[in-house]
Length: 264
Image (cartoon, rainbow, N blue to C red; front, side, top):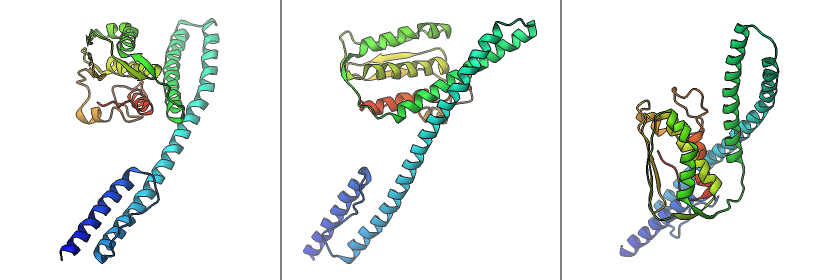
């Protein structure tokens, strides 16, 4: 009886380890156990059946995700050409004589075209970022300096919203091996999001461990909306001039760099 119990425990341990390994690796190998016990073999076969279904769903998801990325890339690229032509004709139209009413309509149209061009460019940048498989080049970077430069570049926008950021940084330099351009892009997207949604407060903290914390109050957003902020293409009603890709791009860049993640 003791031997039987020992063999069953061993089989259960094998199933546990094999199952955990199959969930995190992309492999077609199924779970195998060393015992011939009928009940344990039935359990392993049942789990293998579910693993096959899970693998098929994963492949279907990956294929659909890849098709979506390609579609976004193609659509955003196709939109850029006619938009460029429209902008050119608008410049020519502005030089023509027109009535006051016509001039006002032209300004409205030009403003709408500018918004559309901005959204299209953001969509194109996102499609390029998620599609490219370039090797991330890391080098020693002083995070303090990159963060200070990013905040300074947003000074006008922050000031326009009446936001005076509360900035806390250590006295010594925080140096990490990172992609400086990707880090700057992450900071820019997070700061831009703060400008859009902040109630007027923004606290930025850089710890000696390299962790960076951005905190701001956004009373217009509820708990459900906050939880979706990093989902691609998600945008709240208050941001009608956004594709909802800013924070998603920040998350993708962090994942590609393999240096951590961005959380709400």
